[in-house]
Image (cartoon, rainbow, N blue to C red; front, side, top):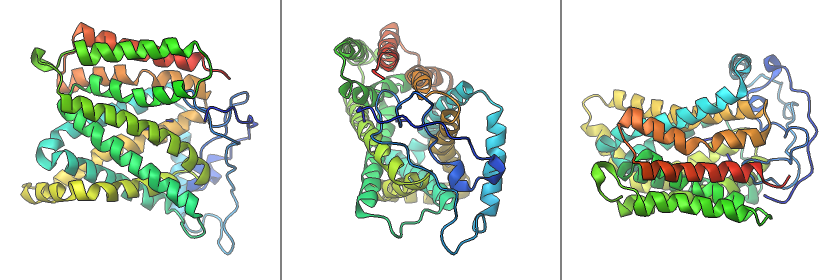
Length: 367
C-alpha cells in the first residue's frame, strides 16, 4: 500500500516511454523518471537524493532479450495499454480503495487465523506472487543493497502486523489516520519552512480529537492496545518510507519489493506461522481459506502498488501526493460501508484535520 530525502536532487529530464509491446516485465514495473521540473523521487514532500535510476533495456550478457520471460512481458504490455486509457487520478483513487477494502476483508480472517496468522499468510502470498513475477537476481548485489532490502522488510513487517492489530481493536478510519502520521511526520521533519509548524499543529490537534476525545463503537473509550499498535504502525510507516526510497534506487522495478516482502514474511513467521497452521488445519475447506487470503493479498498490497506505479508515469508526483492524502477519509468511508463502523463528529473532525494538514504540507513544500 503503494508511497513514499528532502535535499533537493537534480531534476531528471523526461525520457520517451518505451512501447508497451516491447517492454520486458522488469522495465514495465520500473520507477518512472520524475516529471519535468520535479525533484527526482519526490513523493509526499520527501525527495530522493540524486537522480532516478536509469533502466536498461539491454539483456544481461549471454541472454537473449525477452527469451526468459516472453509471456510475462506480453501480459504486462497488454495490462499497461489497458490502464493507459484510464485517467491517472482514477488509478490513484482505485488504489486507495483497493488498500482499504483489502484491510476490511482481512478483518473476518482474524477470527479464523488470528491477527498474526492472517498477516503472515497475506505477506507470504504477496511475496510469492512478486518473486514469481520479477525473479530478482541477488548475485552480484552489494551487502549494502541487500541490507537495505532487509531493513525495508523488517519495517514492512512491523507496519503490517501492528496496523492489523490496530484495525482489530479500533475503527478503520481512526487506525488509518493515526498510521498516516508516519508519512506526514517524515514530510514535516524534512521540511525547512517554519510555516510547516502550523500543519504539524493541525495534525496534532486531529490526533487529540481522535484519541482523547473520540470514542469507539458503542460509545466506549478507544482500546489503549489498539492505539499503541496504531502509533507503532505509524513509526514503522516512517521507516518504510525512508528505506523504500533507498531500495527503489538500488533495485530495479519490483525486485527490491519482492525481496523485502520475503523478509517480512520470514520476520512474521515466528509470530504467525503457528496460528496460520492451526487455522488452516481447523478449517473445513483449507483451500477456500487460502484462496480468500490470496484475494486479500492481491487487494493489498499487489494491485494498489501496480496502479500507483502506472499513475506515477502519467501525472506529477505532487498531484499524486495530494490525492493520497485523502486515504484516511477513504478508510473511514470503507469502514462505514463494509464494517458498519459509524464515527462520531469528533472523530470525523479529527480525520479532517489530519487530511487538511497532509494536503497543506504537500502543496506548500519547497520545490
